[in-house]
Image 1 (cartoon, one colour):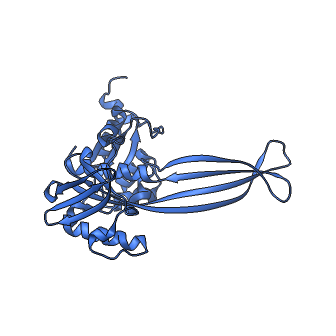
Image 2 (cartoon, helix red, strand yellow):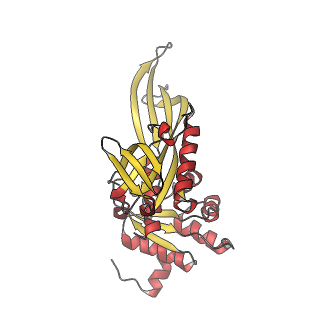
Image 3 (cartoon, one colour):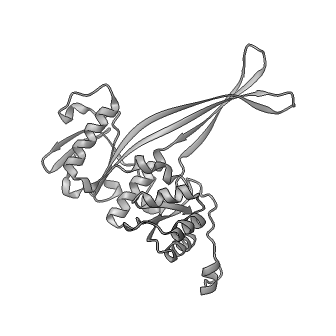
Length: 290
């Protein structure tokens, strides 16, 4: 790599080639601005550097939250992005994927008991674990929406060509709440769809969202609002330029209908769990200065 001079630093542009989910990346996080809001120059520079449209740039800066704007392959590229943003008076933090420890799974919890200054967690396939309130760094709540688009294609008169005949879109909603103690290895994930809500002293509702709201209320009251983060739901779309949801394609093979023509079914599923995990681990890293 060529040495960086004052002149070259002024004309360099970041390489924003896509980084695969399984590859090691480096994310540049932009800190919230002060109460005066962004200047026109800051909006323009964020659009140019992160290569996003103006409405998205405005929404990121209006969120009042620390959010990733790019994910690049190397530390040098991340430092270049951070330097360019710094020249526009943005505060930034660089997060290496290794810091997020995405391969380290949080321990799953199926029952909780809140008692005084401790919370007892029944780990899935394990025993009860007690955690003191003062040891919990942050609690992060996430509402995730997965989408599946089913596509039906039929052959056209042109040999080998397929034409979309019909599409259907489906949504699936899920929730997760992460509790972080001293490290990511000491983190726990509550999946509200498997939690035994009777331990909260309530009669469970047949509506999952009602149960989640009560679980959230009790945890927020117990840990304190400053350590309870429920922001993912409002910023999930703003994360997509840097951290897009994972997608997978499934082929359903060929089918015949009443018209005896051959049709091909396929589906594209977009899953948000990895994106939420990145957001959750980022909140822990920024809280602890990891």
